[in-house]
Picture (cartoon, rainbow, N blue to C red):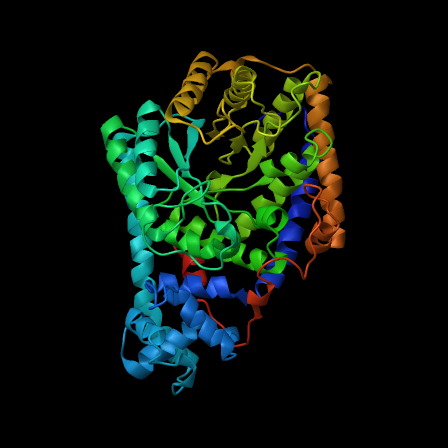
Length: 518
């Protein structure tokens, strides 16, 4: 792609190289550690589900008991494999016995690691086959009934009741939506377990559970066949259960998942050591099954200034890209985030926003860029808000964005009604249709406002990445360089769930997913 912004390719390469070194440095830390969530994810992928008599998820019960006995450093895969060898039972049967207090995994006679790995291999292969079938089903739908044009129209539902969400999601699909995001109930990201079953009560959103995923997937397949367009399902693979929810999404054919360790660290105060380890396994799963991950850089500009700190967004995008590379995620599955968040009273603010969106497209030409709407400066003036969203939509089609989360004219007032969503979809469809090829027709003035803005943001991002490479990512976060939020390396939620691996540790899914075909 020829740069309309006259970006220096050497500066882009310098920034990308620094980001790669930062990611590789963090991978060295990741490879030495596991977490309670990563281990629970392995159990879920082995087919273990359900709850005990006091509603504790069985994966939690097993991991907590192994951790209490001091055996987590070896990994749950060994303990389940050993239990299969010693009892002849399947993983789910073993889990239920543990849940009833009738079996202690760490007190069984011990087999060799090779025997344990061989014992669980059929269950690993069975799980991967289910995921591959879901990926094939997505591809079949797209090949037969088709999909919407990019930028995909991406809207939210958030009633708290999964069955009411289904009604609203199907209505949105009929109105033209391409992606339905089911917002999670408030603070679910801070729960260190995944709720079980279908749920009908939530505040500010609906619980992310495997059954809720299954219900919504079925509903969107039905309406997709009706409207002749595959409807993508989005949820959140973030928080303390990041890889568990990624596994659930893979098994139930979600298409888009919000997934970003930095978001959890900065905005949910989740311990950075815990979530950086969890992010890797979650992204390996996401990469394997064809899910697009969304990163959370757009949120930086809700707590920091969108003009002064735009370079932190680009620096984080470049790091997220390199973390994704290490997890074997192809570029088209990288939904790198950015946002239209400048103060609308800024003179020439539209030109700056256009510059930054064009810059993201040029630096990540093959990524599925996620463009987020104005929120920080939305007010009760719904008419001005509708105009702000229109300008945002214009930039999206102009610069070739991929996933367009539509703003709602009632943003910051209440959870949107059906007609609010309809008006937002109509706004985007009108602008996308009338300005479809605008970007192909327009060049930018040499050394003008647009070019200079992008060049400065790129230069500042490169400088920041060079400094992070020197200082380290964890100390950089502690210093508050992202989103003007400081977090301590040994603070935040979930640190107690981090464990150093021993020499016998193995995760049977990592190698197969990284080496297997998607």
